[in-house]
Image (cartoon, rainbow, N blue to C red):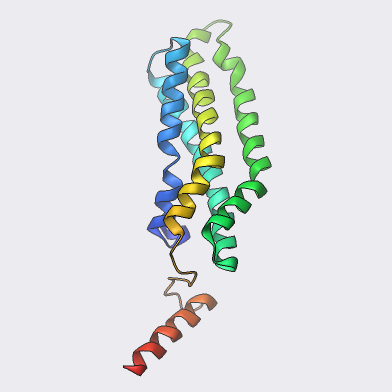
Length: 174
């Protein structure tokens, strides 16, 4: 789905680089708190992966739009990170605050669902750092030398019309 949306496997892979950070953060939080891997903690990891991917898509979409305008991947990644800092942090803090009562595990059955909250909190802590610090660097590295022209073959896409006509014009010379 990401490749179809962005029309680029490279951008999709850049976004997916946040997943290992989520898994690592969730596993470390479970280890620190003495929780086990179980169905609840797996569900927590899946939830935090979803939020992390949403944050990464938000940042990379903005960075890619900026890169198409100015042609500089590093400057675009830095600007996108600064522009999307507040929404990403707000999303993570809201999710972490919502999971705190569950992670504490008080009440009847609290021990059974506490790994879900702990996995989400650990995953989002690492994910937020990764999306705001590491992801812009990966974006700049992966897309530093790529063209800003649209790869779309859709005849209705204005950018692709210019790209296709430039390719046809190059072929006419030979």
